Amino acid sequence: MNTTKVWNFADLHLHTTYSDGGATVIEVLEHAMRNTNLRAVAVTDHDEIEGAFEAQRLAPHFGIDVIVGEEISTAHGHLLGLFLQKRIPPKLSAFETIVRIHEQGGLAIAPHPFDASVPSLGCRLGAVNLCALPFDGIEVFNASIFWPWRAANRTAQNLAMSMGMAQIGGSDAHSLCAVGSGRTAFRGSRASDVFDAIRTRTVWADGVYLSRRKHARQVVDMMRSMGVGAFARWVVHVALPAGA
Image (cartoon, rainbow, N blue to C red; front, side, top):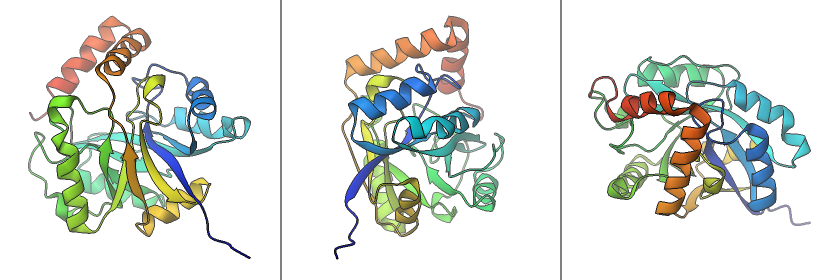
C-alpha cells in the first residue's frame, strides 16, 4: 500500500479583527474553505491569541485545520510563534521570545525579515545577529510586502538557505482578498503535518504578490475594522517603530 502523503498548502500568517485585520475569524475560515485550496491556516494576530483560539474551536465546522499563533512585537522586530498554548507578551528581546515559544513546544518563525516598511528583524530596531537566533524557520515569501521593499524576500531566502532553515510562505493577510496569496507547501493534510514538515525542513514557499488594488483593499478594510483614529496611530507605530 502506498502511504506517501500528498503535498498540500498552509497559510501561516493571517490577521483578523482581533488585531488589525479587516475580517472576522468566521469570515477568514469561510473564505479559506470556499475560495482557496488551503488545508491549514495559522491565525497570527499582533500580540493577541484569542482570535486563534476561537478559530481553532470553530475549525471543525469549516473542514480546515487551524494553528494557534501570534505575531509578537519583540524589542528587535516582529516574530511569529506557531503552535502556541498561551499568549507571549510583547517587548521582550527576540531571543527571549524564541525561548518562550519553545518552552510551549511551539515553533519560532522570522516573518518579513529585512522589510524596512514594518518593524522587522534585520533592520531598524537595533543590532541583532539573525544567524545567532534559534529560529525554526524564516518567512522567505510574504505576499503583502509593498513593491519598493520586495527585495527583502530574496534576502530572507538567501539567509534561510545559508542557515539551512525551513523556508516559509505566508500572505500576511489583513483582508480576505489576500488569504492564501502566500503559502507553505507541506506533505500531509493536518496541522500536525505542518509542524513535522517545518521541524524536518521539508517545506517550500509559494505564492503571488498582492496587486496594488488588493493592497488598497487591505488598507480600507483595516481602517474600517480599527477606526480612523486607531488606524492613524497604527500607521505612526509602524512607520516610526520604537528604536528607529
